Length: 126
Image (cartoon, rainbow, N blue to C red; front, side):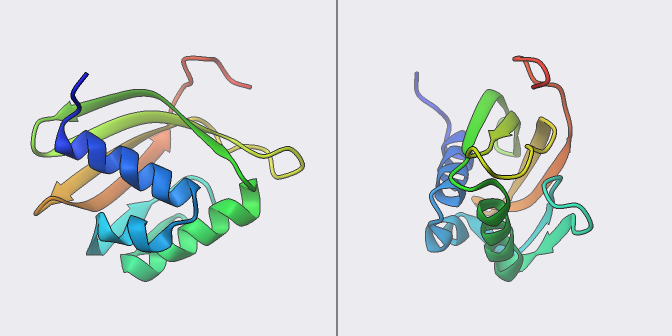
């Protein structure tokens, strides 16, 4: 199945973050990105490239070599991609955050905003 460029960008971004390839992740996001994340209590908004780099660092400190399960991904053509995901931490790390529904909004072909809200997992809460 051929995936759209926006869906491919979201999947590439998720893979780069998971694999701690910060430079690759930053190539996919706008310099003025704003990210509303659910993964870090007390800090839910990340701004710009520095914020994305900080989020990558936190994810790995909290969840180790985690797995990101993308249960569903949809697109409003040319505008945004929505993904239903859950993080499966490496054993011995923090409990996972709740499943999330995350909307990726694009500007000039780059991810300009990431907004996560609690969602439900198709696999059920674990």
